[in-house]
Image (cartoon, rainbow, N blue to C red):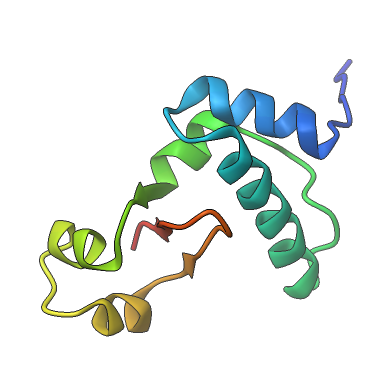
Length: 98
């Protein structure tokens, strides 16, 4: 038998914050963004939540320049052309691995 627990945004953000060194407010915004992203793709609601997988797929950077440099690119625009980026309201940028 498989059990499934429905998590609130805050519960998912708690798990993500515990698995990362990201600010809690940024975790809340990323969880909300991912939920909207799944709905926009027509996949319905985010059904599974794996904080470790999200940590492996997403990186947080303080600046756009830091992100571009870390990926070995000349500009942030080049990074945006190749992957998904998300800007939390408190600053910084999340970059999805590609």
